[in-house]
Length: 261
Image (cartoon, rainbow, N blue to C red; front, side, top):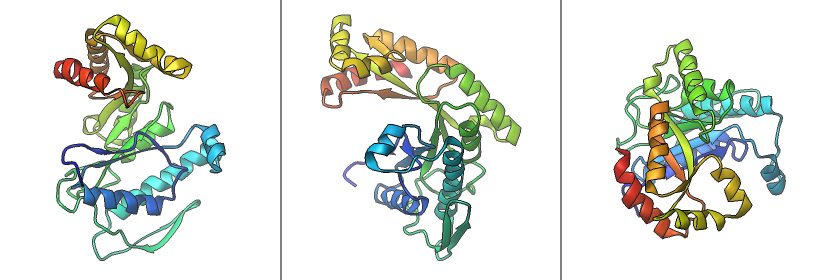
């Protein structure tokens, strides 16, 4: 409510973290509060250690995807239930009985006018991002439900995008209706030495992730952006590990963003 242009959301939340009914209502509430600026990114979950740390059950892979598929159906159902009507779902993992979606998402009319097959055209709602690097179930669910398919990090991105487009064609969905995104770890500096210093400050964990990213001056980042665009990416998220380093953010905004078109 204190911002006007920033889009709000998750990239990505684990579907194991929340029950889909309350999640749908929470997202719809923030969407209404922000004037239709919410994007929900969701995946099947992968990080078992995090689940152990918080005491969250971590089912086998197949079950996690089965649960995610039901969750996406529930999100679509609740967000698109007309005002005054109720939604029910009787599934293997989730059961909702006569649930009412309150508030109506995108009620100010700024949400997307059309969407994937799981959503009726013309009804404003939060944008849905489905992400992951798996070759089968993740892109299949994205083709059915998502406004955006996020490939995760950039390794193997050309093959993942080609696979996703084949899956879309197989179910009769135009892949051009889906935003294609990826995440690029970045440590940028006005000089190569400054960029290396930023990377070094992140330690071993940052170094591992930056192996799929860019450490260098703005021209180095722009070259990688151009390569990803040529591979089919139309939306790129910079993964910045030190959010307190606002000089880094300013540098990307002033020296990289203007060159991305």
